[in-house]
Length: 216
Length: 225
Image 1 (cartoon, each protein chain N blue to C red):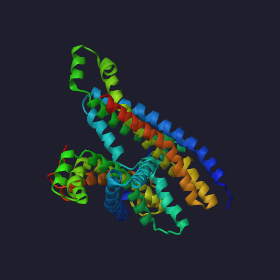
Image 2 (tube, helix red, strand yellow):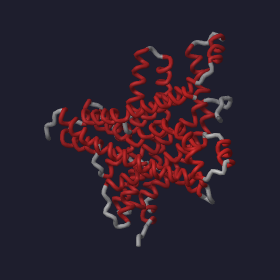
Image 3 (spheres, rainbow over the protein chains, first blue to last red):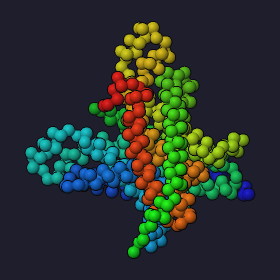
Image 4 (cartoon, each protein chain N blue to C red):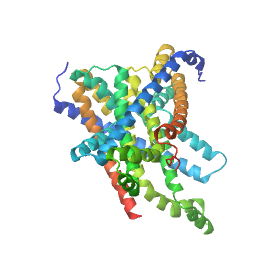
């Protein structure tokens, strides 16, 4: 039994929260990149691409993130790669985020009236020009609020990385609990830290949403 | 070359089946309790007195902005130090219910907010009490309006219950863990579990979409949008 003051517990958790933030940012940036690629592939079309992308989305939205993390962790091991929790967690969360973001952004692109595409076609814009000058500026405006909202989902998702041995906020909480035998106080602190991370993001997303509705 | 051996995993099919059954049972109980809690909270936030409103809002925000696994650990490891001892299944149900309740409250509230004023006025002009108005006029169509979102949320809670294996609730992911600790086929065991979860998610979604209009809000409600 180790004696920890509440301040020491909070200090240690605060240090661990850095890794939660880092992992969230990696997953969000990676997921955004892959999600954008999926979205463009889907818009561009081609035989089977749409079906393949929606199957991808279905699989990642229809299975638990925990199992996805296990599969990344053990699956990479099968190839003889020495898997660090960073790679397994970063990779799995990236794919998870990409599926959700691709779906969210597809909704935003679908919300743009068909006439806009047709007008762009009639101006003989190339696919890239259509996206850059016509679709993206309009879709981005709608996409900001739900995308920021999804960031909260990613931050909460990183908590599961603790189970494959990634030492972030939740794992540190478990370790401190094992040393101090004060689960009530420690997990309450952990929950408050997550709340402090997520709530401002949620509130910001809600404000963006209200603002967008007003601007219409 | 990588050799995958699914036979070793599938040989343990009774274990997988039992795990899947417990996952569905936990989800069913948490769905019923969570829906009730969510409706109560939504009513508290739209019709309650000021302190009740604040309390309900705090609960919803607190749950929605913390990970499920931390809520589960808090219930399972934290509450016993207050003298409440819980089995892992009970703790799972409590955590899942609290989690779904908060999301359901927001979803139901959106449905309630979309009630046309004229319907409220019509109901009041028939001398219905406020309670009758809520239960008979406001709630059923409100649930109908938001049912697709609710179905998605229930599926998310079902998938989230995979974490309950970490506190030794013997649901599907626990079965997969047990199998891989026996034969070290960790990738295959998790792949099979993922396939089962995917099938359960698809079936649960269809079942809920089917049963909602029949049991909760009647066919007259605008179930299809």
